[in-house]
Length: 133
Image (cartoon, rainbow, N blue to C red; front, side, top):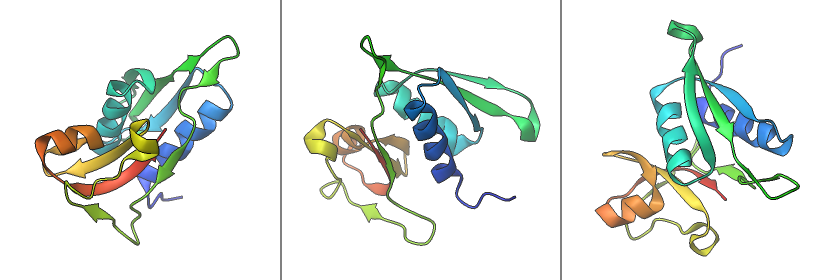
C-alpha cells in the first residue's frame, strides 16, 4: 500500500514505539526523514541515528530516549501540523512556541529543516511540520 504522507508515518512510528517503550524504531529513509531525525537528535529527543539496507529498502534506526527509574519517554507527544491537504506557513515573527518554549516546532525552511529556535535566530520562516514535546 502506498504511503501518501511519509512524515506522518514517521511521527506515528516514533510515537507508537515511545509509548510501548521500545529501545529503537525503524523508519523508511528519505532526505526529509533524515533531517527531522537530526533535529530530534539535536534537541535531545532521540539518542542515536543509524541506517541499514540499500536502495529502496533503506531504513533509519532511531534509538529512543527514556528518563528515570520507570523509563518515562522523553517524547510525550508529537503532533503533525502542516498536512498534504493544508500546508501551514509562518514567517519568523509568527513561528509558534510549543509549551512556552519547552517543546520544539520542526520547521522546513529554505535553508533546510530546523527547530523553531534556530529559525528565529536566523530570522527565517517556513512550513511548520510538527510539534514535539
